[in-house]
Structures are given as C-alpha cells and as structure tokens.
Image 1 (cartoon, rainbow, N blue to C red):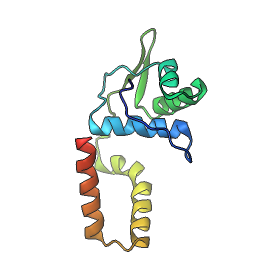
Image 2 (cartoon, rainbow, N blue to C red):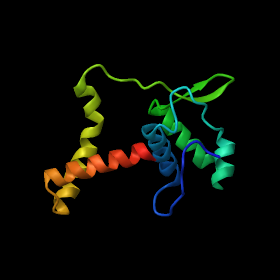
Image 3 (tube, rainbow, N blue to C red):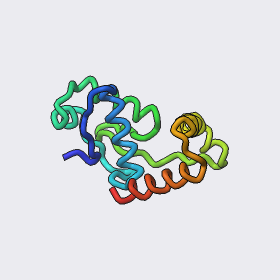
Length: 128
C-alpha cells in the first residue's frame, strides 16, 4: 500500500497526479520528512502504470526538493527548506493565489466566501 492515497483519473498526466498526491500526503501529515519513499517499481505495480511515468514524477519531486536520494539507500522525504523571509515563501504561491482569485471572481465569490472556502478545505485536508 502506498503512503499517499491516489486514484489515477483521466484528463491529467499521471505523473502530475502522483506529484500532487505526494504533496497532499505531506500537507495532511500522511508522509513526513525522513519517511522512505517507495521504489519506482513498487509504485508502478501498485498503480498499474509505466515505470517511466513514475520515474518522471520522482524526478519532479526531487527537483522540487520534496524527495532526496541517499546513495545505496533509496529515496526519502526531504526536510522542508523554509526560506527565512516571508516574501521568499510567498513568491511560489503568488501565481496559484492569482489563479484562485480570478476563478473565485468568475464564480461570483466575494473575499469572505473565498476565505471561508480556504478554511474549510484546510480543515478537510488536516482530517484526511
């Protein structure tokens, strides 16, 4: 059984779905820094997908600093590299927040409704 819940869905590249599932597992506490990451072959077998697809996801996770490879030991969840200043931590999130704000405006949500939605999703993620 994988340490990150995932149901592969059509419409989005599988490697992106794997990356998102790992990020979600970290955010919800299902995976923690120092945890061993399953082997590419094990994930491939579990999901019934090509090992190259899983390798692509692992490469993305390594490049993002989410996974680290320890020679002769395998891959592990890396310790987060928290930038010291708030601006550096916010920078990668700004485009995502803008996309969220644009879509919220398109749906007719005001700021308070959007904040309520974010709080609800945060609680839901922590419970999962």
